[in-house]
Length: 220
Image (cartoon, rainbow, N blue to C red; front, side, top):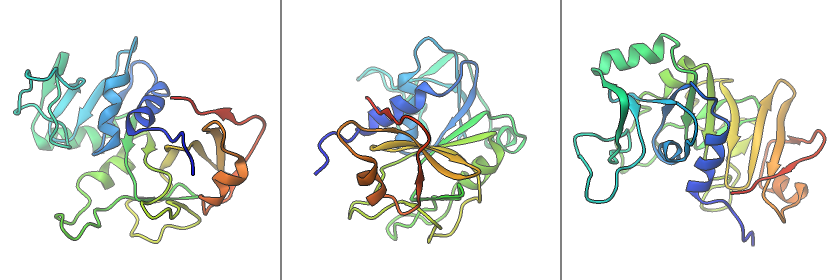
């Protein structure tokens, strides 16, 4: 039993460290929406496809404005200089290549950086939302997700078994166990939670992991 997996907040915190100052960043549904809570000392404009450029962290309890929400329908704040735009203009930003990074969740990622994050829950409204546009429109795609399914099955695969959202777009994967970079040679293991061996992380990763030099400890 692995005792020191990262929480969703810690995954988001680790991803936030790699977002450069001055970036324009879209945050997808789920863990990605937490990233805006962990930007300190950097000026980053967060984009939300529902029509916000300049979304901030979650407001204090009791001060929520339910007319101001992110794509997960969670209350957010607006930073100084933030703007509201209509849905069409919001997607013009995406499709026009104006976003530096798209932080997304995923059901599966392949060793080639293929992304599969369509909604598969039969109880939910099926579809991909703006994921396809964001995956292809942003300059880089960062994935934040659990390393395995609830049943312990790998989500980082040789080939995705779910329908692809986009092929070859993922740059980095941040999970509760590791940080993995997608390279031309394959998936390079960059960081790993303490007390977990390379053999153990490979056991829960279907795709082969490449190790070059020192693998740094993944700390919250």
